[in-house]
Amino acid sequence: MRPLLDFELNTAQSIPRVRSMRLPARFVSTRSGLYFEWGMRLRVKLAESSPVLLDDSSAWNLKAELMRSIWQPPPSIRVPEEFQNAVLNLPIESVSLKDVQRAWSAAIRRRFGYEVFKLSLRVLPRKSTLFDLSQVAAFKHVLNARLLENPALAPLLAQDRGMWSNLPNWRVVKNRMLAQGLSQHSWRWLTHQKKAYIARIDWGQLSHLSWVNFHSALAREVPISWVDKQTAALLGFGGLGTWLRRNHEDLNTMPALNILRGVRLALQRRQSTDKLAHRHELAHEEFPLITDWLLGSAAGSGKQRVVISRHWTYDTLMSRQVHWHLVELDLEMGRPNVFWPEVIGMGSLGNNIDFIELTSLNALLSEAKKMHHCVPSYIDRCMAGDVCIFHLQIKGHAPQRGTLEFRREGASGWQISQLKGPCNSPVSSQLWSAAHVLLSRLG
Image 1 (cartoon, rainbow, N blue to C red):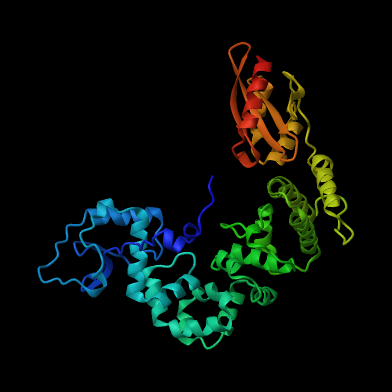
Image 2: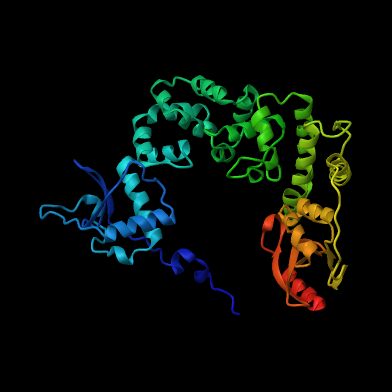
């Protein structure tokens, strides 16, 4: 391959700059309401609840309504200055969804102004509407004054828009959040958090506020990637949600401090882990088991409550939860074990792939705790001999696990019924290949 010459390395000269086409879209106000107009030929009436940012579904609906438009432009209509360089005869049928979204955003910026458009997305990052834009435009000076003092807390201003008319400082917002359930410590903690964290929280939901109180009580940095988008829970510790809704206002009790110490140890292990696959395994397999044990300890389960001290490590935490799940919990529940005949038992398929047949109730329960699915519900079919269930595991740098179910077909035949990963997630092609190899051994 020949080297590039000097004039070929200058992309400003070798690649001509192409400006994107200006799309013929605008907002038009009439006595009957607000309309979205395309090419001065098609119109669609808009509701106040129309979103500021169109997703693909909303863009498709807008395009379909424009295609069904029967509006006829009057003869006296004139081409505005903003359409001087636009292609007015551009057919809506040939426009892509991305172009519809781009035309919608450009029309909003021309209608309300770029400053109001940007401000509304800061204050209402989740679901800003055209009605919100009009309210932000009416109080933009007050909102900008508060955001100059603390720009990260912009989403908190949307909790009560009635206070925008009298908002001399942040005290009104603070009192409103404290009345909803936010703690004083959490408010001070929020003033030092990043915009991405505050934008992810739904401040109108008590469950989200309880998790904010928990995050602040951890007294450590909480990266946004550790927070679930839907529930605001720490990934892997969603089981604490119900307990938090009852106890989030008082996290200084001994059970609460014990839970906080256990979660800190778990988060320290996650932060010190470099491999993404290992972090995923921690959040989806080990942290839920730790959550079960922490909740059992908080409820007073066991003859002697365990107190997590500063000398504990993550390995100590894991060994305690394993002992609780396999020994203490079984003794407390008085659960009898049930067995059924095995078909092939356990063994290896080569290439670091092992299989273990689950032939008892305790084995199914242990599999359910590790994999987070409902495999114990198959106990009746296992005892009847209609199905046999295996645990597949691939060892190595990126370990993989799966629960495999075979269903009886005929007198002595078997077929693969299902193969699921943790939390019923799909598995890799390598595990599926191992399942077919095991099926050939059963046959």
